[in-house]
Length: 309
Image (tube, rainbow, N blue to C red):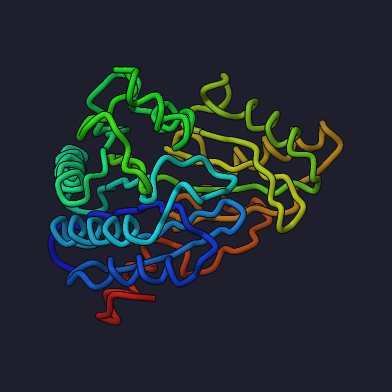
């Protein structure tokens, strides 16, 4: 692919109905120039992450196509899952990959937000580099109270009102958080215990907001399907806090509670450099494969000349 490349990694509040996820991915992939790279679904979280890339305009239209299908098919009033959410199309970050600046991705995020409101009447919050209000850089601040809590707060609290749209959530699709950021690694570590309290205490110890590692967001959740507790994380700058540093810290903390690490899993893709930095460390991967590497997946997709796998 010649020219600038932007990645988009929207998170949708559906991880149990395969037909819905397929329809959303199909809508994104129907846009010429939108290269679908990866799809991850999680029934416990009841959430899916779809990764695609391409030229900025193609990625913008692909993102909007995905939102359209999510608004049509996902009803948050019936949604239950371990992962926090405020929208059917919950989070939509734009990431500069090649020949694109962060400032250009910010402008792309703002355009996407305006179009989401205009086309679907879903209010929008901007986060990370695209944030327009202090405190909204952090996704967890915007998502406080989840769909149910925000639905009430947005009507009465000026601090909770969206950046684009009315002070009223969409009745079934909620709101969407749109932003621009560096490459984020969504990374989970599964413990050898069903005690979710241990996972929550470990998450509190390692996350930046509690005085832990910089650029680490973490929470403890229960994986009902496996009867295991999980430390679920977003690593927002893997060069500042590498993935193996986090793994060793969780392993050490778990041992202190008399438990261990069952395995770790990647949600979405990972840059090659992040793996190179962790060379020699056994991260107990459960799902890592060659196609998990961003650069390899993009190269393979472009070599095939198709838009999907």
